[in-house]
Image 1 (cartoon, helix red, strand yellow):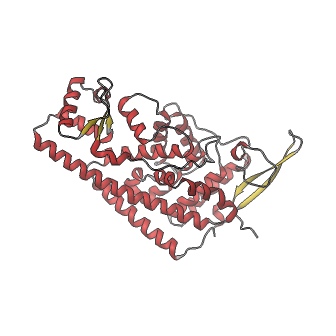
Image 2 (image 1 turned 90 degrees about the horizontal axis):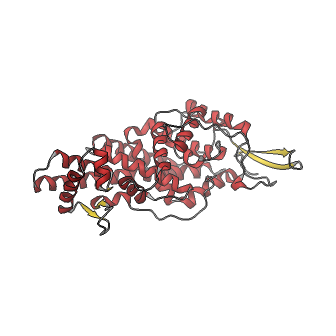
Length: 382
């Protein structure tokens, strides 16, 4: 007997020769009994909580937490979108930010959506608002309503008894089940984050951006335990690194009923993200401290110089015109500051071009090192 993971509901399309198809309504989270605790899961939970607590302690007292937070949140948004869509990698995004040449509005919209979501509870109206921001930005965003028509697995309509997203009339009740589960449930937030992300992706409530919005939900769940470290928890980097396994588990859990396998996988992703962010933060702070000491020992610097240096902490790929524009400084003042940074081997020019020069804070290149990406097709691109 196959394990119960939800209902495959038969439908007859009277407009297409009574064509029969199926939709999938995932097992309600409020039913409980989705998994059994074992030693491995208990150990994973303990380790993940320890690493999250360590990261939270580090970020609370980090002198440069603001620029570091901006960098890691931008990385999260970039990698989340890369899981489902083609587009610029993180180094390219930083270059576009620093030069103003190129369009990264989808990434910046998504960053606004993350920021907004971190103050919200999971409920259908809030998710519609988040989807609207992710698609259109927070200035023009209208809420994106849940689907009012049926969508099909990879766009293919078939009469086979298999997965298609939840039927439109059942979307709001299944989202309400998620809200009730979070409100009434006493489970560990790490387990909640894993199950809520899985459930949302099975429902597929929106016309598009389900994968992108779905990866925001764990942040909304985890804010109760992660605190100020939430924006530096780069889950999507590790989901991208494990993209094959990630997408395979989302596809197969509905057939296998292996919720505990999915939960362990997702908690390990959270654990690795927390541990990696802590290591990155320590290295970032150590690098900045050494560089600042070098600059202070070299010669007294003006307030203009330090303003430029503060800027490239958060934008480690930069051009002189964009920095001058962002800081409301003259081109010559910023150029002089860049010359000092270059003389002290903190920044280097990316090419030998005489015009449109781009500079990189070379000591921070560990921030934008790229993961190896496989080419598995995402089920969330539609």
